[in-house]
Each structure stands twice: as C-alpha cells, then as structure tokens.
Image (cartoon, rainbow, N blue to C red; front, top):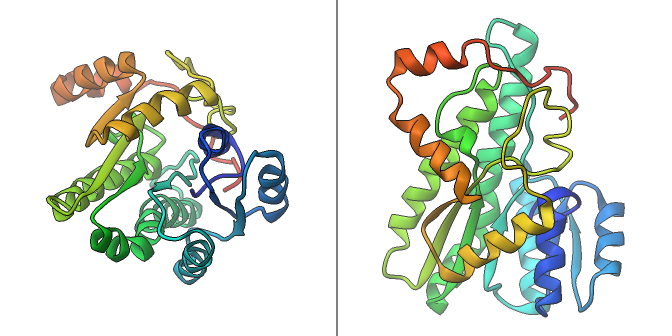
Amino acid sequence: MTGASSGLGQAFARHYAQRGASLGLVARRGDALAALSAALPGRHLALPADVGDAAALALAARTYIDHFGVPDIVIANAGVSVGTLTECAEDLHAFERVLRTNVNGMVASFQPFVEAMRGRGSGRLVGIASVAGIRGLPGAGAYSASKAAAIAYLESLRVEMHGSGVRVVTLAPGYIATPMTAGNPYPMPFMLQPDDAARRMAKVIDAGRGYAVVPWQMGLVASVLRALPNPVFDALFARAGRKPRDLPL
C-alpha cells in the first residue's frame, strides 16, 4: 500500500490490519511508517520509498514477497496535489512532479506484482484516481490531468488482465478530509472522513468492481459533469475556487 503514512492510506492500513492482513506500508516518511506499523495489530513491514523511484518500489515489493508472499491486494494510493497554472514557468516542475507521482508512481507500484498475480490467477490491483479526473478543473491542470490519465491507464490494465483472475479496481473518490484537501479554499460537498472512506472503498475492492465513485452522491455529480456541454461547463467553472499554488509537494 503506497501513501500509507497519512490520510486515506493510513485509514486503509487501519482497516486491513483489523481484518488480519499483513501489510507492506510504503511512503516517503520512514518515521511515520514505523510508528504506524507499531500501532497496528498484526505483522507488517514499513518500507520507506518514493513512488517516483521505480527501483525503490521494486525493492520494497521483493522485500514484502520474501516475508509474506505475493499479496492479495495492492493499493496504489500515493498522490500529490497542488494548484498549477500553465502560464507560470515555475509551475512546470509541479506539473512534472504531480504526473510522475500520480501516474508513473501507480504503474511502478503495480509492475512488480503483475506477473506473480497472473501466474497465481488471483489478486486485486487497486488504483486511487479522483472525480477531478472526470473534467478538467481550473487551477488544477496537473492534478486533473494526472487523475484522468490514471483512470485511462487503469482501464487499459483492466482489459489487459481480463480472464487472468486478477481484478483491476478504479476508485474515484470525491472529497476526503486529509492533508491534501485541508488547504482547499472552496466548498467540498459530501466530504468523507478517512476511515469511512476506506471502509466504503474496501467494499468495492472486495466485490472486485472495475470502477466506482465514492461516495455515491459524488458519482451522481460526476455523471452530471460528464454530460454538461463544454460551453455550459466552461461558464460554470471559469470562476470556481482554485487550489493554492504554493502548497508543498
């Protein structure tokens, strides 16, 4: 599980540890991972790594498999978000970092496990996308692009794994009360607490559903947004609130 040190990832860790799972906890902050691992029931591994480093993720995967075997579920949850504007040259680095973490990091999180899961004939590859990937949001070009790419990538992977016994699950959450949303200066309807979000998403994972928006109310909003003609969407969102550009990545 990537992005395990805080927010939704930490909530997933609590949920699955309570169910008796042996977890591989991946995030950049080794101290936070060690503290989380020690606080959870059961046996777990704290595996500090940046998802932007494919070699580090491959090593973490080998370490987990050596201890616990091929996992039943891999959750690519790590993600970053920051306000961006294409007109600002200084935001080019932010675009690159967001796309590398949210898209390439997801691919690198899954890659070490795909062959083994396919050979076994079972498993779940779970990618955390976002409703922000359904329509491009102003001031969030990097984040919206990364989540749209994640949705398309996961669909491609789902088709590739068809008939193998390995399920690919795309989760597109709405707003969750995490550090990522704490700086948003605009209304966030249907906000979920992390533990509630993890519990709801785990039900989708258990069912092996290919795609789900959580909560369901945001699914209705997403359906409406998809259906809006471009001129209507543009007029409605041109003056929408925007995420600050100076948040740390």
